[in-house]
Amino acid sequence: MSPLLHHHPPNNDSFTNIVSGFNWESSKKKGGWYNFLIKSIPEIAASGITHVWLPPPSHSASSEGYLPGRLYDLDASQYGTQDELKTLIKEFHSNGIQCVADIVINHRTAERQDSDGRWNIFEGGTPDDRLDWDHSCICIDDITKSGDTTTNSGGTGNPDTGADFNGAPDIDHLNTRVQRELSDWMNWLKTEIGFDGWRFDFARGYSPDITKLYMGNTRPDFAVGEIWNPLSYGSDGKPNYDQDGHRRELMEWVKAVGGSATAFDFTTKGILQAALVEGELWRLKDSNGGPPGMIGLMPENAVTFVDNHDTGSTQKRWPFPSDKVMHGYVYILTHPGITSIFYDHFFDWGLKEEISNLTMIRIRNGIKASSTVRILASDPDLYVAAIDDKIIAKIGTRYDVGNVVPTTFKIATSGNNYAVCEKQ
Image (cartoon, rainbow, N blue to C red; front, top):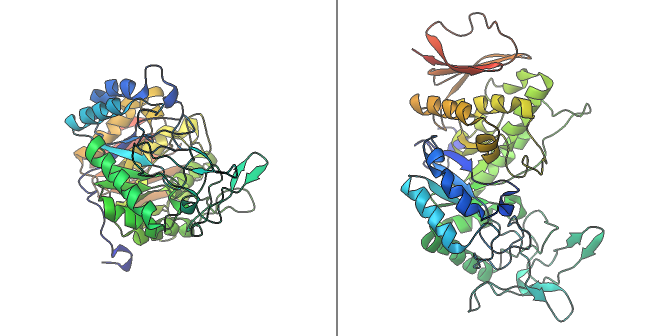
């Protein structure tokens, strides 16, 4: 075994395919998002989905849930009530689908101000004092920004162990009360609400040692971290060909967490969309001849994706080119890694049938997170790869691929400038 793989990967080779069960506008849905999403469960279950990633469940200063306050108060969520959430999760479970909670614990919004007018008095959302924190649970170096205004929340805790988040006070995760009470809350989400796993929001905001602690205290069936850092760029404004440092950062985070978590493969997303936009499909083979993203180093811990509520949806902070989205899915749904599908693409873009076809080909041929890739062509206008020597994926504008694809492979599905073949 290579030294890179001395960790304990999650049990992802028993086929894992995630769908993000929301977008940036879901909290505004009339009648409640939970009540709306429950109607889609039969479609999701029939499409080879094993996990659904649900939005942050708690009371929040923002309707989307990413500025949480009263963590135990699930009735104040803009997505629906606690009972509606439990009903939704129960229905997913009855269809064999696990539910992943969006865990936003890097920062937290206060309930009220202290005697000096600083927002640092927290309320947990229960009659007792669970999660009822004060300034001692905020990092001492925390700064909150709103427009041109910078405020100090009066934190007296330990220095922040990760990146700063300007939108709300950064919580001191070295505080043992914080560790204990957040672990208890997450375990309550498992036992009382029914969640199976976690998506750690802004996981670079605190040390991977902290994530490791919460993983050990809560033992989720599945966990994925959001470590979103920019690619390295050249003077021409394009991403550099070599993004090894970027993907190794993701890999090192997983190893530091203990190897039982996964990370979103932002490296693969960035390289893939750059290759497609620029007509530079040669980017899809690294200098060692393998995939250039995290899936080329630690595929069983890499969650591949095309877009999510941040990068796409109405935020569009780093959107995949809209006319190349299916090429993105052809790549991730045929290649190693743990696959994930964006809600908008599946339900709103009319791509459900094409995406489902790719998923079924993946299942039928037993393609797994740890499958092997043999890249047969990586030219500007043509990318061809064999996965486990069972399927071959072709992406690119070049129609004539010559004898790159053996005659023993037949087309299983195809579309605009893509095809996937199966071995006969």
